[in-house]
Amino acid sequence: MTSGPVRYTLPPAWETAIRGWVGWLKLGGMAPSTAALRRGHIRAFARVSELSAPSDVTVPLVVAYCSGRSWSNDHRKSVRGSLVSFFDWCVDNGLATANPAASLPRVPGAKPRPRPATDEIWNDLLSSAGPRERMMARLAGEVGMRRAEVAVCQREDLVRDTDGWSLIVHGKGGKQRVVPVTDSLAEEIREFCPRGFLFPSRDQWGNLLSPHVSADCVGRLISALMPPGWSMHKLRHRFATRGLAGTGNLIAVRDALGHASVATTQIYTAVAPRAVRAVVEAPADERIAPRPPHGVGNVVSLGDRRRDAG
View 1: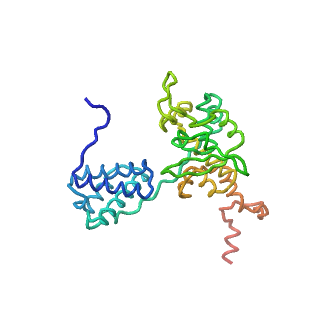
View 2: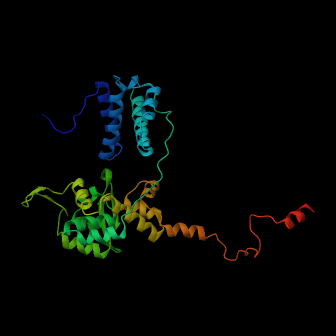
């Protein structure tokens, strides 16, 4: 008996089209994980449609599929994007005569609700973590690295220039970015690992299994040291939020996180209540005229009525 999810087979026309479309996405530099997500969207739609080919799909079918599910706005927006992209590709490659998803209404994204790790969580994490987990946490919380980026970090990625220490971060889709790091973190990296990958994967006897651990392993190790409901990714939210609060430069925070869009960065940055209060207090004029010492503001006296009538 096999274990794990069973991969279902679609009709040949669907399999061929999806394979060609995913290859086209990757050719454009899309990260493998994102391409896999997009492929899953289309495979799920194809399976539910029970049609033999993409050319058989109609507008009402697409509308019924998307409107009949209790998805979040973010997921609905993502599925819509996949459908539009897939059928655009099918039209361009002669596998469909029209795009049945083109007329789907645009879906607004959900309001960003960042949840950065608190100072208490951060301090408790650093004090309770072992050397390996502490290093992983610092890379996430002080450099804003994703768990997959932490997993493949190497000692040779730490470089020094005229401004100080920086770390070459290997991001999504093979993209690299250079993020400055503090002298404190640079020193700890140098002491932690003399060369090669910072986090090699070893078995319980210390035998090397692979050059570096997986992203899932990194996430599990750090999340296990945090309170229930908190994950390693919230350290990245913390980095973004504190970075924006300290500099006010959203573009710089975007570049440090490796985002292509400022809109994505805004999802990560929480606004401190004191900042909102400052917005309210800024236009208030302390020299505003005082209220009259008598009367009630929303009550008109009999004398006032007679005066107004005269």
